[in-house]
Amino acid sequence: MTMRETLRYIAGYVFGGTIFLFLIPFGLYKLSGYDNLWTDLELLQSGSVRHVLSVCCLLSGVFWMIWSNIFLFKAGKGGPAEGMGVSVSPRTQRLVTTGPYRYCRNPMVLGALLIYLSIVIFLNSLTALGALLIFSLSGITYLKLSEEKRLEKDFGDEFLEYRRKVPMLFPGIRFNK
Image (tube, rainbow, N blue to C red; front, side, top):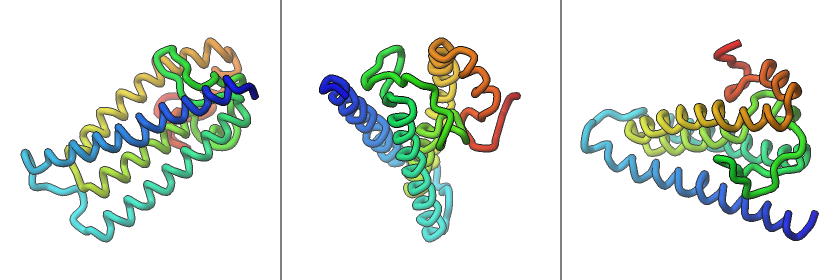
């Protein structure tokens, strides 16, 4: 690996980490402060249940994110930081269909959403939950309209066959066949 590629990987992880592991969680935290303006309802009344669920979501989310990044780097020979046609880290050279990618096409996104859900549950915030739902639907739409088009262009029939067999986001759950 050249020094330039190494720097691009580092930049990709710093860029992605800043957005997905700092800014979005911080935004959910800030939004949770608005609950008291419009509702007295809580997601879960039991603090113990809330904390256990939150930790379970956090640990499983971290697991999916780390596992998917390792496979993207080793099997795909690329990095995750790409969006709206701009690559920060090197683009994957191979379609990754093993490891976590055999269970869903976007395990990194699944991991991030589980982490965000853990934050929402921990904060016990309906406002943050609403924001997470809107963010999730927007993200899924982006994946469908942009990222999957790029993967189809880059990997052709191999990606189409993979997409036909493997669910987009939730292992074992297909919304359209």
